[in-house]
Length: 173
Image (cartoon, rainbow, N blue to C red; front, side, top):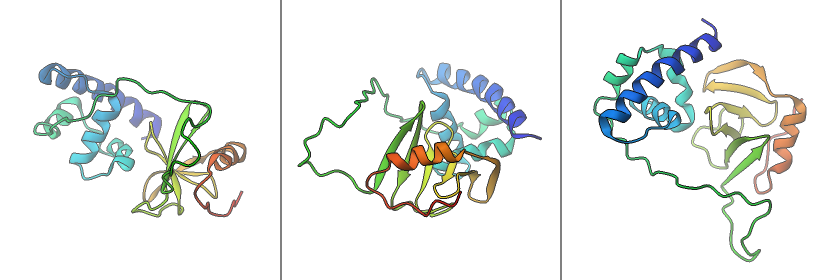
């Protein structure tokens, strides 16, 4: 079954389950929070939660898996983005992680990621959880499963150009 069909089925079934859980618990559960929760009960970390697609669960099976899960997600009430940092230059910055925004997508790079695959460092797409090899542009849905697509050299360079505090792997495209 193609990834597009799996994704379509997952969205349909997870939307049903998410709506039932939201009503049952009296909270709003975002699709990303739902995906992370389901991935968590299946043993995946937050950055690998797209692996839930491989299970092809029905809404009922998802609800069963999440029966005892405690949704304690902090509710984000606002997100503010500035063109340039508003912090004074003398304020120490984190050097272990960067969040890159490009063309409406957010990619997070952890300098000391516990899993150095597919590159060290690599980027995680915040919305999908896909991993990006920062040298080749190859995309991965999980540790051992490359997608049959890669990002273009132009966009790979655009992301790399925004990274300031982390040494990147050699560009191999």
